[in-house]
Length: 213
Image (cartoon, rainbow, N blue to C red; front, side):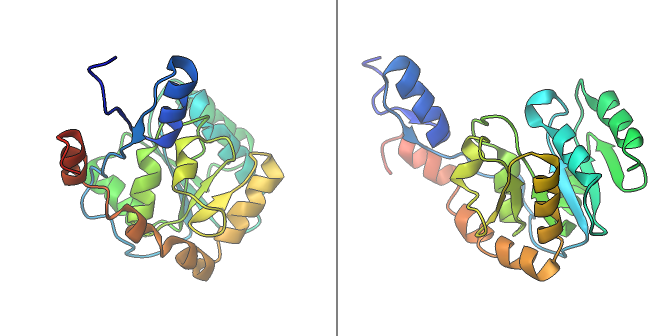
């Protein structure tokens, strides 16, 4: 332990866990976005989800909410995982087969295109460590829909400033999606994102780790 001073964590959320369970203080040091070319090319009428398809990422709550969405939004889901078949079946049962697209493991180019053209990004995992999906969305000037218990995501998403924070109750989440379906509103929420993430660079991380920052 004495050799690990100063200590860094990838988010305030992880630093809090380190303090709580180990009694060790750490300074948050956010990793940079690993994807170049993120930008707001358009705000097409779809919500994008980029996450592993398992229970912790709560993509099922998004699909359930879409059954109550009143606006003409679509949903594009990128990712794979143990829950994919169940989520595809849920989509069919809720009558959403024509509105929900599963992309599986998208290529870097395809994912970049989806980020750059979406209206907003949904990312609401349980107590996330950090969440690169959030940072990628904000870098592309896209607002993020998340939940009050999503951990590190909340270090970047402020309600009605860079996104919407909504309980994952079906109707409340559907209402948040309907609000952000307004393109003017989505653009306004996403506008601050690139400025927030521009300082997240490897140079900054390296300088801190080498004691130069």
